[in-house]
Image (cartoon, rainbow, N blue to C red; front, side):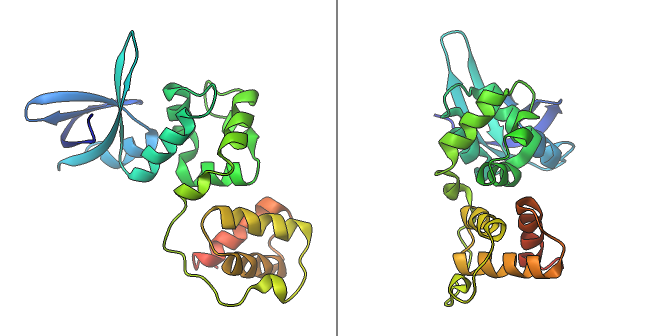
Length: 205
């Protein structure tokens, strides 16, 4: 089984990257995110790979980072989602935005990916809702005080905070960020609160 490829990028198009390793060119189907990071590179690059073997085809998929590869594996595990649809979803949304769409039940955004219908988008959300935690950052610091205990919050704030928890933040920091976003007046809907909360935790506001 191929784990990764390291070599020079000798060709790219909208879906393909060819990596030359010891004189052999490996054709990798990949995402727009990966292509943006490697296209035109003059130095050697490394792609993590997934080899899909079928009766009529052997296809190699390449990813710039492990989060994309892990997300790809989760997507192809969803009923009715094959490698082509999984790559389409990742190219359209990227890992972070897909995780947010799943956490907030945003099937509409997932449906924007080519070759992905409404039923497929709903299955992605339903089947991955409890699995997206594996894609979240592991270096979030926990807070000793749980702001949920300090004051009550509205339904929108609670839903927004739960979405941030799904992204890997602790309940304490998620609740604090969402409450600050609500107080700022920049967010009222769940999506707006999530967006503003993420900005605050990233130090952008």
